[in-house]
Length: 369
Image: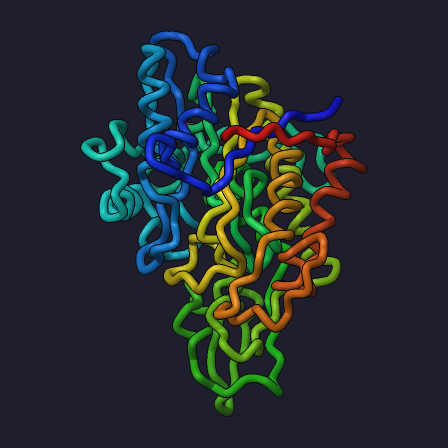
């Protein structure tokens, strides 16, 4: 079966603004007509870490909220707490960060509710026939929804290669214990010849796993959780993500968690990828770099795996931003983020989906003007 992917670009005019085009895409999908009055509808998004201004504009979620409310249902915004310390590590801080970034009842029209509770302990194990994961630890506040809309900022990721709907489902729906399970294989490594002792990795490490010895970084692997924050913090490429077999295992675990979420919700889920402000790092990082390529547009569909494939294919053809620090690496291959993070085999995500779960990745784009 060929998956239908809706797409609308960034061209806008008087009477046909980006907001109107985004709403038109939602309506033409037909998904919102299936929502019943009284249903609790989760909108799974990312409110951005404190210090990061690259997250999605709250107005995208407001439009979704309005379309859900038209059907008499009850929408709420949600996300899970983070494994690392920061502005979203617990439900209290997470809610405050959401409010600071504009995701409030007053601006969006729906409350923000942390999906895994105050301390990230509210989760249910969902079976999945994975190679590494047999029971995915998914947040209760997501599983208890009658329906769910995944609103995803499509961008790069220092460990997964790219962050799209798959990442939003997998890491984004997992409890803290589930995040630890996915991260447990891949650990960063120090390339001592490149380390200048700037201590950026030391300051970024959320668990204190990095110390400085002879003005060089040293990682304590007994403490390290493999979150990749040190990799993003290093300006000298001295911190290398845990690649090879370990990184492959990480991507496979992410894929297994995503498949568990998709299997749980089935046709009650809808997926949106926003390929705007396409930064090289994820919104979890407390800063946002120059976008890698120009804005592309919005994608939507019911198959998140084909959706990510379609988004990545189109993003990879976009014009590179010459002020990006990654610009010298970019040559226009089939996978933009394979060039941004050359040692992260992000194509393996799709290969594993097809090989292990027999997922259909073929798609046809239907353009909404």
